[in-house]
Every structure is written in structure tokens, then in C-alpha cells.
Image (tube, rainbow, N blue to C red; front, side, top):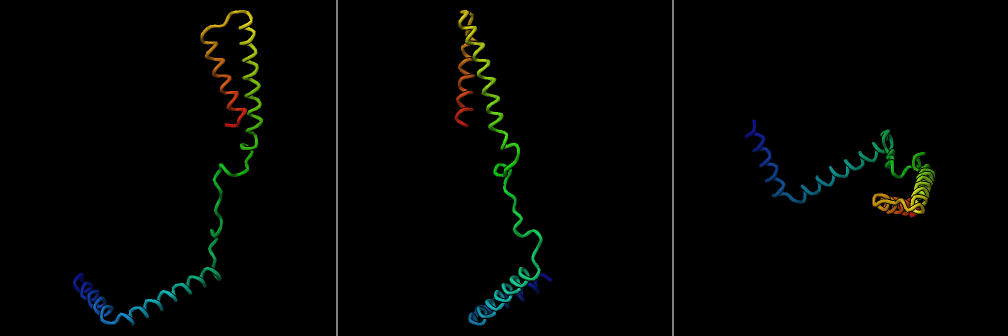
Length: 117
């Protein structure tokens, strides 16, 4: 079975080499018919999934993306309140090294929220 397919394939290849114009003509006819058939299928029998590409969640207008500024404002308010308590602690000369690190961290977080990063 494999040898007969191999022989037929070699015979077709030899014919294509001996008759390049006919091979080209038949190939173009086959491609043209395929293209026309594809057009007819697309026009008269369109698929249901055509043009139903959904954008990624990052770019859609969801409630979560609209609530981000509100959440940022709440976070900024929390940071300001905590910084105010640390300021009172500073005025009482009761700051520790951990408090200084916390102030730096809170200030950086506040700047990130303020700048939108």
C-alpha cells in the first residue's frame, strides 16, 4: 500500500516537472475555487462566533476599576490618620526606630497613591 502511494506521488511529481504551465494553471484554478467557496460560505453561512472578541478584563469598564479612586482616597485617609498619631508621638518625644521606619513607609505609600502608581 505504501509503495503504491509512493509511486503515484512520484508519478504526479514527474508530471508536474514535465508540465509546469499546466500544473500552475490547475493549481491556480484550485486556489481560486477554494477562495470563492470560502467567500460564499462566509457571506451566506456566517459563523456565530464572528467578531465576538471580548477585550481583556483590564480594559473593560467594570465597577472594580471605577472604585479605585474611592479606595485610594480611603487608603490615603488611613495613612494620614496614622501619620498624625505618629506626629503626636513625636511631639511627646516617644518615637522609636521602628516608628521612623513606619513613617518612611507610610510617606512612600501616600506618594504612590497620590501619583497613581
